[in-house]
Amino acid sequence: GAVVSQHPSWVICKSGTSVKIECRSLDFQATTMFWYRQFPKQSLMLMATSNEGSKATYEQGVEKDKFLINHASLTLSTLTVTSAHPEDSSFYICSARVRQGLENYEGYTFGSGTRLTVV
Amino acid sequence: AQSVTQLGSHVSVSEGALVLLRCNYSSSVPPYLFWYVQYPNQGLQLLLKYTSAATLVKGINGFEAEFKKSETSFHLTKPSAHMSDAAEYFCAVSHRGGGNKLTFGTGTQLKVEL
Image (cartoon, rainbow over the protein chains, first blue to last red):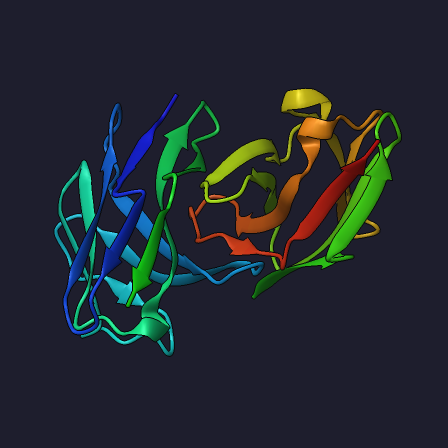
């Protein structure tokens, strides 16, 4: 099945530094990837949608300059949290859209998530 | 616009008892509906999905869900709970055909007691 590999699984960084999170589609081409943020015991909040070779589409209220998304190839999308601060600490999850079956149905597969802690 | 509502942020059942997690959806077009499970500090795993075929959908780990258009519901059930079922469960909706983004419910924490 379609697998998305997300790294790192956890990271601790100092306030003011930048952190890059990678998501790779291992056995399929991901033309579209989604980046979510999840606060403790809460649901997933969509941050942005990235399409290979074009600019990401950010959801309302998400700072584009804070959360840089790059989707330069069909198998790799990255999220960079720039000038991170403690309030950016969260669980970040990527997801890729997968085309499946004769119905042309599109499913979604998720990475394992990255726990970011900014100190 | 699309949305899902999960009734009950916490559900507790005894091991061996029926599991029922509720999800109601709102969508202006025929929806795709999903149930995902999340274990602590992990991503989401698909349990099952409805894509307009059979209204009773069987998924992994003994879970199933029934799409009821008249009730706009997609409740998740399992006849007999197991300790390993304890996790967070999310219902989600997307649109058919366009590959629209997923919209998640607020989640239900399932606790299984001995």
